[in-house]
Image (cartoon, rainbow, N blue to C red; front, side, top):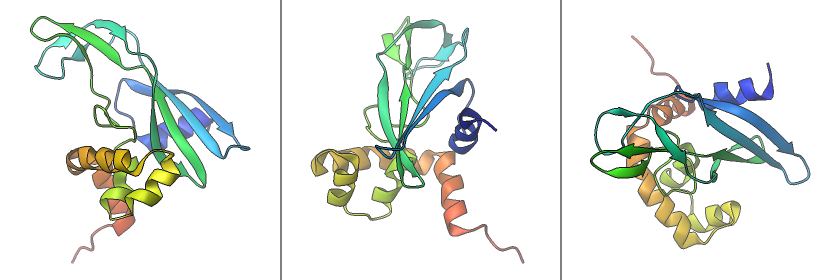
Length: 162
């Protein structure tokens, strides 16, 4: 199994997303994972239904994810934009994060579970007010996220059947 296959399995990315490459920096205790999508895919406008062709891509964004062992993990991606007849040129939603969040939905789990914002902000290297804002934006997405549900069930253990 390659590093890319390993992270694809861990991240459970929905189609058409896949892991393009993985870089490990042992000195910085950091893992960087670049995500990409398949070509020729049609995307929905985030505000209305309808499959549209890619208009262009936003510059690369980086999201803090859950640590891999004790290595800080970051996801990188260039999200596509579509040209909707009703809403104009809009960015598609990243299935792993809230619109303006700096952390992935799973990366915000610690905060939602009650960890202190100031400790997390130190770990993420951002101000504690920014971290608190990221967490509050992520709460609704976490509850709706099937990835969060699977993670919660893994952490909690599967339910016992009678």
